[in-house]
Amino acid sequence: MTHAFTLRTTFSRLMLGSVLAAGLLSAPVRADDRLVEHAYRADEVVTIPGRTTVQATIAFGRNEAIENVAVGDSSQWQITPNKRADLLFVKPLETSARTNMTVVTNKRTYFFDLVAGARAKPLYMLRFTYADEEEPVDDTPLARPSEAERLAHLDPAERAVAEGDPLAMPAEGAALNFAWERKGAARLQPVRVYDDGQATYLVWPEQTPNLPAILVENEKGDEGPVNYAVRGPTIVVSDVPDRIILRRGKDVAELLNTVPLGERPAPALAQRAGTTPPVSAQ
Image (cartoon, rainbow, N blue to C red):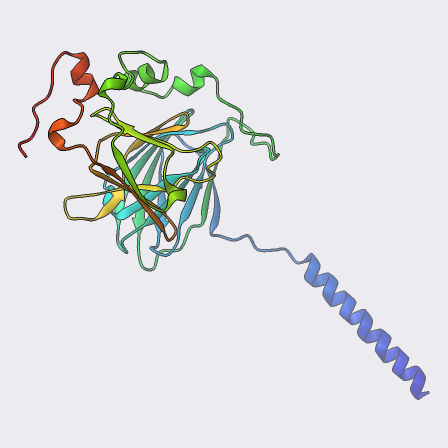
């Protein structure tokens, strides 16, 4: 009798455990609200909440590549794309930093408010969805956009560069400055850096998965991201700073323009116009 009771009790416990396990396995998993999908609208400003200890990632559409990023006040934000230029990493450097950002891709233009706060709800990933196209989920390599798509959102000057107009390309080789010294973490450094007096050109190896943050110092010594454009494998910084800082995690590198100010190449556009702008006194 005791033996039979023990068997029934054991069987009941096993059945109860199975039912509970089945209930746990079938319970719906709550979506992580730090991972957000957002329907794209051309006339909308999207707010990105930020915290200094959290990096947010913005993911754009398939076959979409970043061409320009412009930031209102770049001194308090770290902003950098991945090598394929379909992701943008955003992180505030100050607790209460706030500014706006415009991102132009080969397909669309996006407007953002970047708002940091000590109590801001962290955002890990913002992925855009699009009503006018389906986003297939597969491992097909990113297709290159057509020439018309690639040039559609560029202004006339940028389009001239992209189309190879010789009057819009960097100055001739003799007017290019390759005298840039490299310091710090070798893994962050581009394989080529030069300027034409108007813009600085940075080229990384094709296999580089993620680019470092590209930063400059303002007059107060604060670091902030630069405005840049993507031209194939080349990042074109819209200025010629004395010093460029590259950061990724704890790794840091520097690019230093070693040519004295008075000996630097005149801006390319001024050269083509047959004029040379005045040089500041030393």
